[in-house]
Length: 231
Image (cartoon, rainbow, N blue to C red; front, side):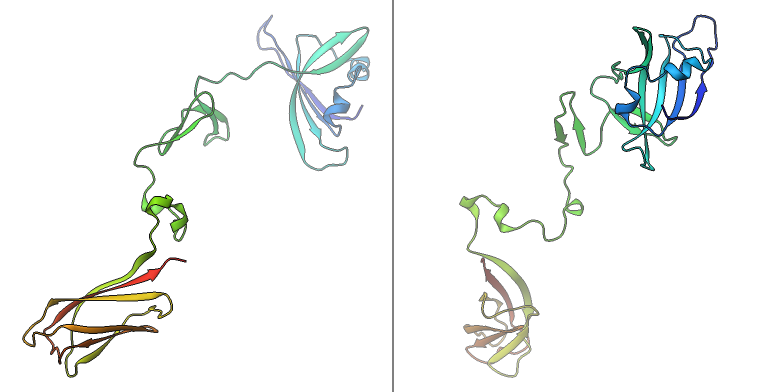
């Protein structure tokens, strides 16, 4: 027996049970649970009763530094005083979970907010609780879409802008544009005074080059889309 320290709890009123005994040990749970574990303790003059309960700190191994706390019943059988595992269930209101409160005490609360939980352990996400701010950037990929709606490409860039003028061919900076993966679609939104049309649109690295039927001037408005092929 390796009881390092103990404290006998006091009964506040006559007949009030159980009394708690607090033991600090360097034993494992298996050692504490052996028959006759309290025989020496009782032989030293400490009075115990089968109505007592014991709160015992034990170790995972005899030399472990960290301790764990266990609750035992005090029992007497065949001349031996022993500690037996307490099987009394901890009560908790239907559907609640234990949460450590501000005083570091486990307290039963009902889960609320973005999720609820049933008394069978089923977690339900509340309606409208998954917002953009709660989704990690880059975590929504095309693989998450059903096969029937998976696109062959996605619109990577969409811009409406004015032309600058000075020549029939005009280059627009599109940072991130890639000629290997991107295809361009250009539409004249307002052809201005020059009344031009789009003849060609070529994607090069970070650039979209549009060739018009004539100098578009600086009052032609175009809209372009760069569609990126889905890998």
